Image (cartoon, rainbow, N blue to C red):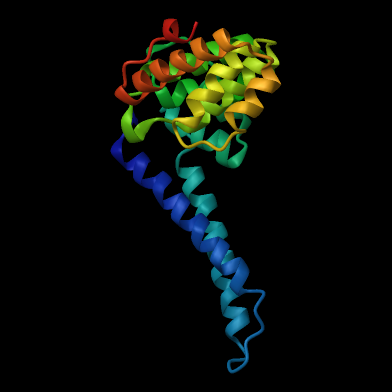
Length: 209
Protein backbone atom coordinates (compact mmCIF):
# COMPACT_ATOMS: atom_id res chain seq x y z
CA UNK A 1 0.00 0.00 0.00
CA UNK A 2 1.04 3.59 -0.56
CA UNK A 3 2.43 5.43 2.45
CA UNK A 4 -0.19 8.11 1.85
CA UNK A 5 -2.94 8.50 -0.77
CA UNK A 6 -1.28 11.72 -1.96
CA UNK A 7 1.71 9.75 -3.28
CA UNK A 8 -0.50 7.98 -5.82
CA UNK A 9 -1.87 11.37 -6.89
CA UNK A 10 1.64 12.78 -7.17
CA UNK A 11 2.74 9.89 -9.39
CA UNK A 12 -0.35 10.40 -11.55
CA UNK A 13 0.61 14.08 -11.82
CA UNK A 14 4.06 13.01 -13.05
CA UNK A 15 2.56 10.89 -15.83
CA UNK A 16 0.24 13.72 -16.89
CA UNK A 17 3.22 16.07 -17.04
CA UNK A 18 5.12 13.47 -19.04
CA UNK A 19 2.36 13.34 -21.67
CA UNK A 20 2.09 17.14 -21.69
CA UNK A 21 5.86 17.37 -22.19
CA UNK A 22 5.69 15.01 -25.17
CA UNK A 23 3.07 17.22 -26.80
CA UNK A 24 5.12 20.34 -26.14
CA UNK A 25 8.30 18.78 -27.50
CA UNK A 26 6.47 18.05 -30.73
CA UNK A 27 4.78 21.43 -30.87
CA UNK A 28 8.02 23.32 -30.20
CA UNK A 29 9.42 21.93 -33.45
CA UNK A 30 6.55 23.35 -35.50
CA UNK A 31 7.34 26.70 -37.12
CA UNK A 32 4.58 29.21 -36.25
CA UNK A 33 3.04 31.02 -39.20
CA UNK A 34 1.01 33.88 -37.72
CA UNK A 35 2.51 34.53 -34.29
CA UNK A 36 6.21 35.28 -34.07
CA UNK A 37 6.45 34.54 -30.34
CA UNK A 38 4.40 31.33 -30.36
CA UNK A 39 7.45 29.06 -30.63
CA UNK A 40 9.15 30.87 -27.72
CA UNK A 41 6.05 30.42 -25.56
CA UNK A 42 5.92 26.75 -26.42
CA UNK A 43 9.56 26.43 -25.36
CA UNK A 44 8.84 28.22 -22.07
CA UNK A 45 5.93 25.82 -21.44
CA UNK A 46 8.20 22.86 -22.21
CA UNK A 47 10.81 24.06 -19.71
CA UNK A 48 8.06 24.55 -17.14
CA UNK A 49 6.87 20.95 -17.60
CA UNK A 50 10.43 19.66 -17.20
CA UNK A 51 10.88 21.64 -13.98
CA UNK A 52 7.51 20.41 -12.70
CA UNK A 53 8.49 16.78 -13.34
CA UNK A 54 11.65 17.36 -11.35
CA UNK A 55 9.63 18.98 -8.53
CA UNK A 56 7.28 15.99 -8.44
CA UNK A 57 10.08 13.41 -8.22
CA UNK A 58 11.91 15.45 -5.57
CA UNK A 59 8.74 15.55 -3.47
CA UNK A 60 8.71 11.74 -3.44
CA UNK A 61 12.39 11.20 -2.64
CA UNK A 62 11.84 10.48 1.05
CA UNK A 63 9.05 7.96 0.48
CA UNK A 64 9.24 4.48 1.98
CA UNK A 65 6.39 3.11 -0.15
CA UNK A 66 7.65 0.26 -2.38
CA UNK A 67 5.34 1.37 -5.20
CA UNK A 68 6.78 4.87 -5.06
CA UNK A 69 10.36 3.61 -4.85
CA UNK A 70 9.79 1.40 -7.90
CA UNK A 71 8.30 4.37 -9.73
CA UNK A 72 11.36 6.52 -8.96
CA UNK A 73 13.70 3.72 -10.01
CA UNK A 74 11.92 2.72 -13.21
CA UNK A 75 10.93 6.21 -14.38
CA UNK A 76 13.89 8.33 -13.34
CA UNK A 77 16.73 5.82 -12.89
CA UNK A 78 17.09 6.70 -9.20
CA UNK A 79 19.72 4.23 -7.92
CA UNK A 80 19.03 5.06 -4.29
CA UNK A 81 15.35 4.24 -4.79
CA UNK A 82 16.33 0.96 -6.46
CA UNK A 83 18.59 0.03 -3.52
CA UNK A 84 15.86 0.79 -1.00
CA UNK A 85 13.29 -1.12 -3.04
CA UNK A 86 15.51 -4.21 -3.31
CA UNK A 87 16.19 -4.11 0.43
CA UNK A 88 12.49 -4.89 0.90
CA UNK A 89 12.78 -8.17 -1.00
CA UNK A 90 11.26 -11.03 0.98
CA UNK A 91 9.05 -8.73 3.04
CA UNK A 92 5.22 -8.76 2.95
CA UNK A 93 5.37 -5.27 1.43
CA UNK A 94 6.55 -6.68 -1.90
CA UNK A 95 4.22 -9.66 -1.91
CA UNK A 96 1.80 -8.30 -4.51
CA UNK A 97 1.33 -9.24 -8.16
CA UNK A 98 2.67 -5.89 -9.35
CA UNK A 99 5.74 -5.78 -7.13
CA UNK A 100 6.72 -9.42 -7.70
CA UNK A 101 6.77 -8.56 -11.40
CA UNK A 102 8.78 -5.44 -10.61
CA UNK A 103 11.37 -7.61 -8.86
CA UNK A 104 11.39 -9.97 -11.83
CA UNK A 105 12.34 -7.11 -14.16
CA UNK A 106 15.44 -6.57 -12.04
CA UNK A 107 16.50 -10.23 -12.01
CA UNK A 108 15.68 -11.04 -15.65
CA UNK A 109 19.27 -10.37 -16.75
CA UNK A 110 20.82 -11.64 -13.51
CA UNK A 111 19.11 -14.85 -12.39
CA UNK A 112 16.70 -16.65 -14.73
CA UNK A 113 15.61 -19.25 -12.16
CA UNK A 114 14.72 -16.57 -9.63
CA UNK A 115 12.94 -14.61 -12.35
CA UNK A 116 10.86 -17.69 -13.15
CA UNK A 117 9.85 -18.03 -9.49
CA UNK A 118 8.95 -14.34 -9.18
CA UNK A 119 6.85 -14.38 -12.35
CA UNK A 120 4.94 -17.42 -11.10
CA UNK A 121 4.38 -15.72 -7.77
CA UNK A 122 3.09 -12.62 -9.56
CA UNK A 123 0.46 -14.70 -11.37
CA UNK A 124 -0.40 -16.53 -8.15
CA UNK A 125 -1.14 -13.19 -6.46
CA UNK A 126 -3.10 -11.79 -9.41
CA UNK A 127 -6.85 -11.44 -8.91
CA UNK A 128 -7.45 -12.32 -12.56
CA UNK A 129 -9.81 -10.64 -14.99
CA UNK A 130 -8.60 -7.34 -16.41
CA UNK A 131 -5.83 -7.11 -13.81
CA UNK A 132 -3.78 -9.89 -15.45
CA UNK A 133 -0.41 -8.56 -16.55
CA UNK A 134 0.18 -10.05 -20.00
CA UNK A 135 3.87 -9.14 -19.80
CA UNK A 136 4.24 -11.78 -17.07
CA UNK A 137 2.96 -14.49 -19.42
CA UNK A 138 5.21 -13.35 -22.27
CA UNK A 139 8.18 -13.26 -19.91
CA UNK A 140 7.48 -16.80 -18.71
CA UNK A 141 7.55 -18.11 -22.29
CA UNK A 142 10.86 -16.33 -22.84
CA UNK A 143 12.50 -17.26 -19.53
CA UNK A 144 11.63 -20.95 -19.80
CA UNK A 145 13.13 -20.96 -23.29
CA UNK A 146 16.32 -19.41 -21.86
CA UNK A 147 16.34 -22.10 -19.17
CA UNK A 148 16.24 -24.77 -21.89
CA UNK A 149 12.75 -25.94 -20.91
CA UNK A 150 11.10 -26.27 -24.33
CA UNK A 151 7.89 -27.91 -23.14
CA UNK A 152 7.39 -25.21 -20.51
CA UNK A 153 8.07 -22.55 -23.09
CA UNK A 154 5.51 -24.10 -25.44
CA UNK A 155 3.01 -24.29 -22.58
CA UNK A 156 3.35 -20.56 -21.84
CA UNK A 157 3.18 -19.73 -25.54
CA UNK A 158 -0.16 -21.59 -25.66
CA UNK A 159 -1.33 -19.71 -22.56
CA UNK A 160 -0.30 -16.44 -24.23
CA UNK A 161 -2.56 -17.22 -27.21
CA UNK A 162 -5.55 -17.32 -24.89
CA UNK A 163 -4.77 -13.78 -23.77
CA UNK A 164 -4.59 -12.53 -27.38
CA UNK A 165 -0.82 -12.14 -27.23
CA UNK A 166 0.58 -12.40 -30.80
CA UNK A 167 2.70 -15.52 -31.25
CA UNK A 168 3.47 -18.03 -33.99
CA UNK A 169 0.78 -20.46 -35.17
CA UNK A 170 0.21 -23.80 -33.44
CA UNK A 171 1.88 -25.70 -36.27
CA UNK A 172 4.91 -23.39 -36.28
CA UNK A 173 5.30 -23.76 -32.53
CA UNK A 174 4.89 -27.50 -32.72
CA UNK A 175 7.65 -27.73 -35.29
CA UNK A 176 9.83 -25.29 -33.38
CA UNK A 177 9.62 -27.36 -30.20
CA UNK A 178 9.66 -30.73 -31.99
CA UNK A 179 6.60 -32.12 -30.17
CA UNK A 180 4.93 -35.42 -30.94
CA UNK A 181 1.12 -35.78 -31.00
CA UNK A 182 0.87 -36.95 -27.41
CA UNK A 183 3.05 -34.12 -26.03
CA UNK A 184 1.21 -31.54 -28.10
CA UNK A 185 -2.25 -32.64 -26.92
CA UNK A 186 -1.17 -32.89 -23.28
CA UNK A 187 0.47 -29.45 -23.23
CA UNK A 188 -2.40 -27.79 -25.06
CA UNK A 189 -4.87 -29.21 -22.53
CA UNK A 190 -2.64 -28.10 -19.67
CA UNK A 191 -2.40 -24.60 -21.18
CA UNK A 192 -6.21 -24.38 -21.19
CA UNK A 193 -6.26 -25.25 -17.50
CA UNK A 194 -3.54 -22.73 -16.67
CA UNK A 195 -5.17 -19.92 -18.67
CA UNK A 196 -8.56 -20.54 -17.05
CA UNK A 197 -7.01 -20.42 -13.57
CA UNK A 198 -5.17 -17.17 -14.36
CA UNK A 199 -8.37 -15.55 -15.64
CA UNK A 200 -10.24 -16.68 -12.51
CA UNK A 201 -7.51 -15.47 -10.16
CA UNK A 202 -6.87 -18.99 -8.87
CA UNK A 203 -3.53 -19.79 -10.50
CA UNK A 204 -1.02 -21.96 -8.68
CA UNK A 205 2.49 -22.76 -9.96
CA UNK A 206 1.71 -26.47 -9.57
CA UNK A 207 -0.67 -26.15 -12.54
CA UNK A 208 2.17 -25.37 -14.94
CA UNK A 209 4.63 -28.04 -13.82
